[in-house]
Length: 76
Image (cartoon, rainbow, N blue to C red):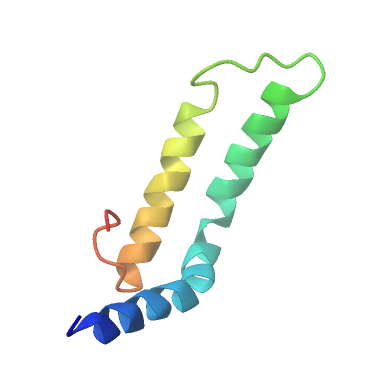
């Protein structure tokens, strides 16, 4: 278990930085939320891939934000 302390230190650091890093994704989160709301609201038509474009933009923003904050490539 040598070195496990450094792993947990990195994880804790990433978790602490996460909310601030993602605050830059407000526009993307709002667009995705509006799409989901429209698809699930009265008269909505919730179907697979209804908000794919909005979700992809939100995910890309999350990955970029995590990378800027030293979160690696977003695949860990």
